[in-house]
Amino acid sequence: MAVNVVAWADPVRQPELGRLRAWHLVCPSESLRRGQVMGWSLGGRELVLFRGQGGGVHALSAHCAHMGTHLAGGTVVGDCLRCPLHHWRFDGSGACQADVGARSGQRPFPVVERFGAILVFNGPVVLCPPPELGAADLMWRAGPAVTVRCDWLPVLANSFDIEHLRTVHHRELREAPVVERPDPFTLRLRYTSRVTGSGPSDWLMKTLSGNRIGVTITLHGGTLLSVESDLGRTRSALVAGFRKTPEGLSVRLAFAARRGRVPGMDRLSLAVSRWLFTSFLRRDLSVLHDMRFNAVGAAEDPVLKQLLDFTASLPEDRDDERG
Image 1 (tube, helix red, strand yellow):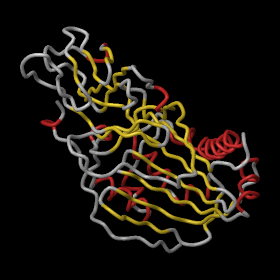
Image 2 (tube, rainbow, N blue to C red; image 1 turned 90 degrees about the vertical axis):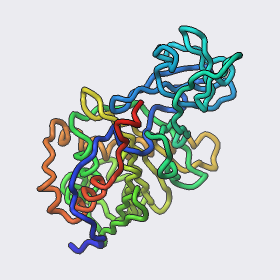
Image 3 (cartoon, helix red, strand yellow; image 1 turned 180 degrees about the vertical axis):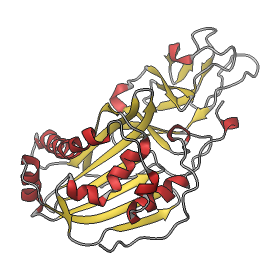
């Protein structure tokens, strides 16, 4: 099968997921209410997030610049975070709001809310904007995290593996897939498929799409993966955020569906979108658990070769930036 691809340099390294200078999905927005504080770690870096009384979410380095107290035990006062030990207050920019004299502040990290979730940029300077996905008529809901007992690259490779799409997910391509790299932080795969399976979710996909499914898979900075499905009569989307843990790879999914015009249909549309995506993804879990990824074998596939080249080029933060 011919594949429309762009040639890139051979991968010389594969970076650590927790060190990627990119947007990382932390938690559902609803998990951090006004006045709440939470600690969060990423690749050995510890952060503290809090939502001020004005509704904004902020992320700071976790240990107080004064004596090192962990600020996850602090209290939100207005739109500032108060240290539990000496009651120093830090605003969202990390500045210490002291009554007298200049005091050291906390290092801030960029934060946005997208896809019903909180995203934090891992690094002092934002290198790429947060992903914008779908039209304004899409509604989002982030779900609980699930753990897959494998590394990060096998999950990414699974998403870009066209042969796997045929053998496990019962889809056949109608035309050659297209791989695009619109900027240094984005890799995109587009294809149109038809359903060859006969399960309940396969039947529904055929009915909704007329058996012509347009799919766009985009890897944003290596840390966020989006899947957009055009079924003709309806559209749906998925965003997956990845985080490495001692148990394996934590994957948090956010689902989207088009807002309905009939009152009360929004929740049903979102539930259908979630069921279709999870039914599709459930076939992968048993295959990916305890997988030892062979990058050399994967690179024999032209699409997966593009993926490996892309991830090898992604920037990581330096040790002197991780304080």
